[in-house]
Image (cartoon, rainbow, N blue to C red):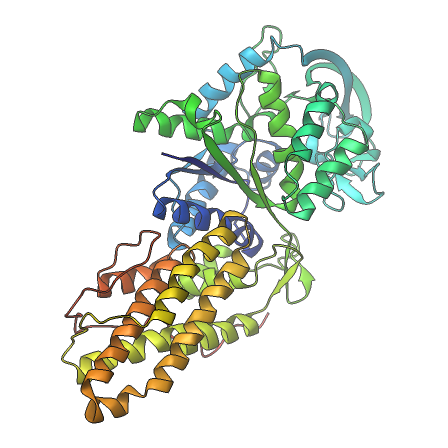
Length: 532
């Protein structure tokens, strides 16, 4: 049995999810559902990133604790993902004791490798606040692009930063210029892995362009060694004598969440973890483009340095950005559509459809409620929902709820059979928009077929032809619903129940004679949308 690991990026548990997160993470659920339908053993994992400076900042602002803040947003994330139909095999959190144990044991072995070195480095100190300043509590100028940035990663160019190279470094709380003392940290010597990382990149020429260009730039500009420990109060303890007052730096433990979560599932399923993270598997990593270096440089470096032959990422599904009404999403300016609000107001499959059909796979794409309403009403209600409804309601009204087995017309059968291979290939290479569009071409074909056969006339003039038409339409509907299930699971499950199909990734035959009399509409029109 094929082992498929699908890792969705771990969102920071310091604020609500917005539509950008949903657009970037949704492909993971499509992949997981598709591979399960094919019969693969899937490990679809993710979790809430509960450590790091952003959460301590939020806790301070709210006069709370990092534990309380992260737990609040973790619960909110779980609820949003559930309502959107994300079928995680395990959605956990970095504060879970099982993750902490895995990371601790991983780091113990890592420290004995030739790629870990102890170094004395500069440490930022705010004379006004009278405390050590780390990561996102530092603001200044990015040395790579000149943009204003915080001290962990530049939002403008994506550069992963060390605090001591930030120009004009100031305290984010009080604005004071920082002074620098010295501290000792452990470093991962990524620079020693240049050849391995170059070979790794060269072996994946079909990654998305942003993943290739970002990774190539990091390698070409010179790989820098990275600190894997930090002087922090909140995080996982460093398992090394003399480092009792430090924590593992967040980037050196959160990406290991993919492994820790998979190892938990392996124990529960009685599967050998080494098989899943060995060579008998295929691994997908799903995230936004700002997370590319963590999955193509950082994670591979940790795995290579560990030295156990762990499987490196196969597919990098790295999305571009979603803008809102033509403007960049800004949580600080409250220019965002929050996922928790969206799932309360709209059909989850309508939300999923929009962010797949308009997915930022190759370039930034825009969200507007006007376009969201238009696509729901034209494609889901007017095309797919209409085809299902007109066929099944006709059956209820005029054919005594009976869909009799028929000989499917050859050209329809061939079209459907080809569709499984074509759509599946597109999903596997991360072309979700094209895959969805190909299915909807068949939806439109089905409506055209229905119109051309005019069953409302043949039910009187030629009842046998009428039943044959409805049987062919039912065959199309059954297979379209099956193909759409990874994309639109809620509505597809309804159709699967009505027509008694299996949701396995293969041609479905309609053998049902009696459909239930309580068929409901698949999608409702959206009459009005909020004004931003």
